[in-house]
Length: 282
Image 1 (spheres, one colour):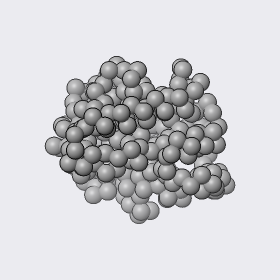
Image 2 (image 1 turned 90 degrees about the vertical axis):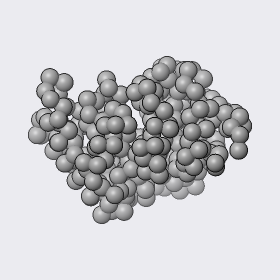
Image 3 (image 1 turned 60 degrees about the horizontal axis):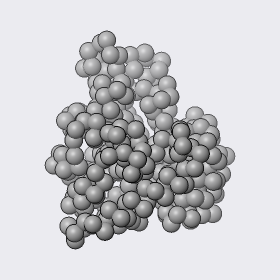
């Protein structure tokens, strides 16, 4: 078993949407992070407004702090972005949104583009929306692959989607999409909401797990570690048993107290992570 390394923890602008991107990147560099996951939220990196001039600015900000991008995660739950929508205009706009996001990944040299399945109407059969999601994901992964970008797919909580919400539906979606460049994201809160464990993902996907959102919950809520009741030590032990070598990101929602002092919340998570590692036998 290879125990996780603290260097696998990347920084991010989650919880920083009410602060400048410069403030966020300064904090991440000062906290010893070398890679960052960029949440595509306005005004930091809103995909429709991320033109070449803006991307040059972001590249410069990253370079000044010797940071690189590990993953780009366009906002796709709260915003009107839905690749499975029953409305053709919204579905097409959403597809174009992600095709542009793949280009942004390429320009910022991000190896991963973060995706979710979208959502169908609750008063219609989910199978109809499932087919729309499959086609969209095929188009997005194909374009991203042409640009040298891999994609990762995360299950959502059932309150967020009626499509991919657990290991079983994620396995079926990956098989239906059939893309060799589409990997898996573990989100510990979505995992807890589905009453699942890292070992369930490990059994189903193995090395196909390419990214982790490591966050506490009660069981949901995307909280800093120690503010919920998820078992961080168990999660890290099972990831270590998997020999996971990818990046882990603290996906902290930036409303409430975290928005006022996001660095303190990130530091709380880093301290909890490193303390838990010391309790995992080699």
